[in-house]
Length: 198
Image 1: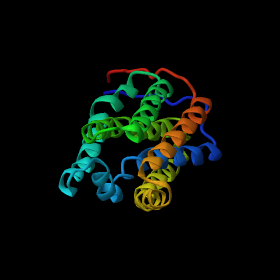
Image 2: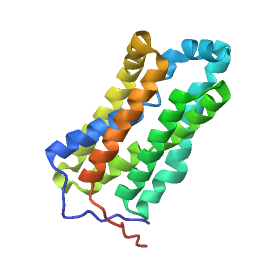
Image 3: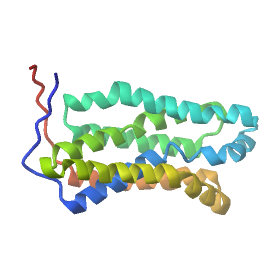
Image 4: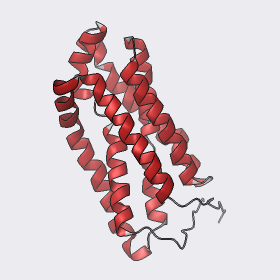
């Protein structure tokens, strides 16, 4: 079995709020396209049926990230892993905003999903840096942020699209992730988990 020892530097209540917000922003990005499928399809000249594949591609990417990238956090510094993933996230969101063709936009959705799985890196970090008595509550707070984002993401993207256009939703999301990259780099503590067999 793989075990990740907690460090003596526990996250504070304020930091838990930051991680909750980070989880919300990261997971929200994979749901922004859902209410925008019709307008995205019109932009690229594709049918609503073909535009609907975007949702599947994003979820597929998220699943691939959880399956192949997130487990790396058991053997490497989660701060470094999250930083790499968020940097890729910024690039993917910027590419989505600038995509000149539907096939490019569709391919980018896969990478958005893959890098969005950084959410599942943050949650174990909070768990491993929380006192045992508070671990469940703090993980629950981060998960609550994630669930609220899933509920609100579609509304936010619909409003932004109506006001300034759907591409701007991805521009704003890229800036939000850039802000998270800075904040998490400052907040997360670098440590290398130790893998032991029992």
